[in-house]
Structure formats: C-alpha cells, structure tokens
Length: 236
Image (cartoon, rainbow, N blue to C red; front, side, top):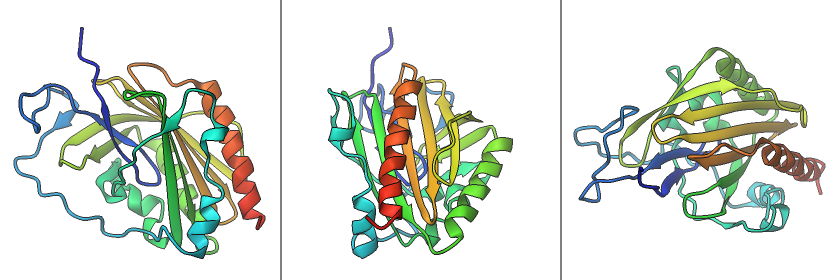
C-alpha cells in the first residue's frame, strides 16, 4: 500500500500544479516517479510578472470570490502558494502566453480543502483590458482541443507531466472552457473550468488525489461562481 502524501499547491490563475512530496530520507528526497524529472541543480526564478492583487480593480474581484459559505459543510480555507504560469506549458505553448498573463489588470484567488490530502477547491478571478479576456480564452480553448499534454515545473524545479483533455460542460457566462488534467503516477485529477463575462474571467479548479473529482460538485460550484461573476460584472 503506497503512502498517502500531502500535496503542494502552486496556484497561478489557470491551473493548480499538484506535486506529491512522497518518500525520501531528506527534505529534497522524492520517490521514484516516471512522470517527473528532477533537475540537476535548479535555481528557481522569480515570477516574471505578478498582476496587482490590491487596488480598486482587485477589490472588485475580491467581491466575486467564492467564500466558505458557498461550499458544503466540512470545507475550510486552505493555505495557498502562488506559482508562475511561465512554468506551465501545453504542447510547448506557455500558459502565460495563452491566458494573456501580462495583460491582466488584477487577479485574486482563494483555496479550500476538506483535509490535508484533499479534495481541494481553488477559485481565481482576473480582469483584462477590453477585448483581451475573450482573446485569451479563445487561444486557450483552441489549444486544449488539439493538445493532450501539459507539463509543469514545481517550485523545487521538478518537471511533472500531465494528461490533458477537453470535457463537455454546461455553458456559463459569455464563454466557458473546461478541461481535465490527470497525473497518473500519483493519481491526481483536476477539473478546470474557465468562465468569462465581458472582460472578467473566473477559473474554478476541483482537485482530487487518489480519487475522482465529484463532477456534480464541480458544476454546482461553477454555477455559483458564475452568479458571483455576473454580480461584479454588472457593477454590483
């Protein structure tokens, strides 16, 4: 029986990178994992760009985030650690480029958990200049339809390979893009749902480790996230 491992979450806007820190006699030690590659001596760079997380635009976004009251009983706030979308690529295309990371006027996020090994919910919101949110989601949607591989680098410099596939999802907002990520060695499943209303983008991630994501829960939370997105998109 394998050891159950606590995940490390790196939370850029688009995706959660989950790397289980299993085994090893030293802090840097890891169990053998065919889906990861450990670099020889990787010095982790600082994120190239971090959108504002304070100010009037961020304050407006914060009003649209999910809260503990929007989740079923048993959930609590989770510690978050932000990552760099330049460290995520879909078939060689940097996520930072696909989602227009450097165009964002502001972004905020929140994370929840039901236990130390999940499941986890992550909700993020970003604001874009006029027209650029649609362009970003158009680029991402086109890439997800043709790309079956996602590669990530965690904060220790370890490369992780994920399977990527688009999934059907009820249309919400002005535009919806949904896909599934799966890391088979550690059996991590992530359902990611982007929702756009005007120049605002909501991203919901439902994450399960050695279990399947509850798709009904994902849809219910996505609908609630869209309700809150509609409220702030309308100026409330």
